[in-house]
Length: 324
Image (cartoon, rainbow, N blue to C red; front, side):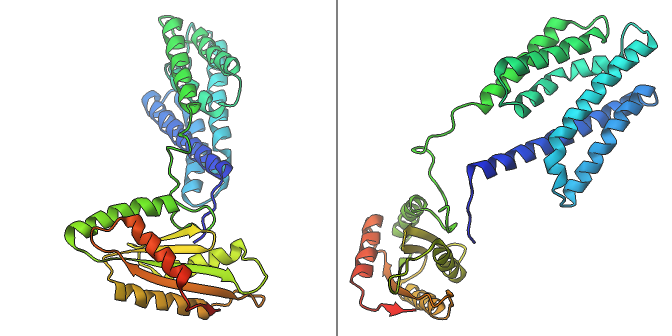
């Protein structure tokens, strides 16, 4: 139930998915070129490249984690193998051009885009030179009718576009509303306010009941309430609510539950069930909580935040505190 996401973890996930996407794309390209050039010797080179990529993709689909970690390296090695093979074919055969080099030159914009994404932390000049070197190297061994300027300009343009997209300013904290609390995984207060405004408007328009439940926990004694205890409380609350309900950690010690299409008596019954869950739960190490639970029903036409204020006042004035 808990959800603790960090920037580095999400970045690694995006990188692994991007690498697996590049691996699948290169496999498709190699397979198409293998079929197009069959049964020449060049098709065998594409087959040698495609088979390891296929095995890595099958292992990824089987749930293995290793392919995600080495997918980027596998794509790079495949590109290097194709480049070296094109040079070898050209020098060994003594022909004026190489079919493999011409194909690599055709796919040079995709290679530049891949390197711009994979090596996005490298200095701009370094990977620009890398992409330009790839185009010029393959052009030297490609067909005589290939034009260097067309491939080079397109490759560098696509690489610059990818670079710009990757380094575009992320949305600021003011414009990006957090949807989940990083500790408990419940809805954030901002998310609850937005959902409450939406649901209350529907409730007022169609005369549907709407209720709120507040649950305030505090340690019974001098022991502080730990993050672990808050997560356990969040799990207890989430287990008692429906998928259509919105459970939120309103502040450090307070949880608020939004109950659409629920009258006040049903909200009170659910509040009692939540209290019973707290009473029968063992927090461990003789830790005890003082729990205050209250329920209110939204009045038609009332400001949604006024309903929240009513709930908070009811929690503050409640005398039915029960040590758990």
